[in-house]
Length: 386
Image 1 (cartoon, rainbow, N blue to C red):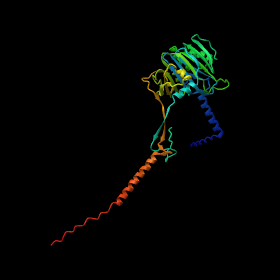
Image 2: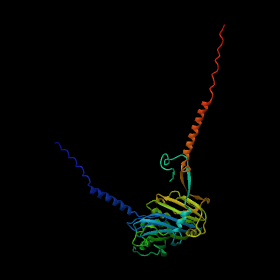
Image 3: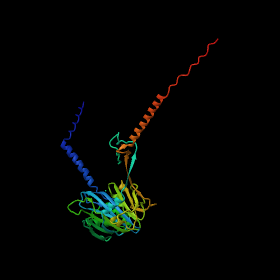
Image 4: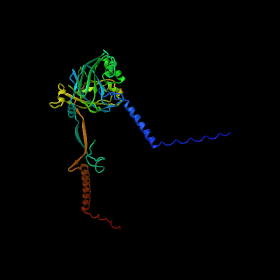
């Protein structure tokens, strides 16, 4: 018996315009929810955590560090964006820290003192953007939960500094530290307790800060007031270990004020630190830079990128460089070599070469024309024989 062939399946009906719009909308929502579910756990120094379901991004972070061999100062400036009304930030410090507001003018003065030198380089032959190939001849080159209190967390100080709620803590148990922070409005992810364990083992203390806009009805964003931390230290250290919790690449800029040029002991999991300035402190007679630099005489600027923060495996320790060699970044502007009202030298040279060649050829022709024509020598006819 012959079995009839199954009828071919009917082709799927094409999606309507409305279905396509809904599909794209759901996809975008899924992507957005996945992004929001991953908070920014860390910035360059310390750990920054928003409330669940909110997102905060550190757009820019710059720190000035001063060390005189006995005391360390860290002045931090953060620029953030996101949808949070407040965010928790924790920074470990090796000794008891004093916290106060810093001055934004400090970073303006540092940027001015370490600004790259600008020089002009001239080139002879035209390039793609120069006449006759392209445009003009300028050729410029171009980031409260309830719970029983624990005795192994000690609050050594709490104060309000501008928009900041600052708590200075000591703890012998990272879980206890996390519990205390949660009870006081600092909601931290569980994995932070594990990341804090090395600091607990070393007996470090903590500065816990709630960042919030002065206007409670607005979200946290823009440039925040700098924070100035001071603590004792017989070695220069910049806490970085918590940055391994970050989900996005990190960039660090450090202005280091000390008696000599300074360098990092290692890259601690990031790219090789780049020195963009090194030299004597050139600060105005008055102002925040002069105050911070008192007792030091050398300024080093270090920049470092951390493409994969999870590779950060230590804090930055800085040491004296082998020599106090001065250095300043130079930005070159390449310009076509011209004379007078913008006339390219190569063009004048080419014209002159053509003129010289033409003149030489003309003189050669004239000389040949004026040369007298000598008569041919007489033909000698031998006498006939006989």
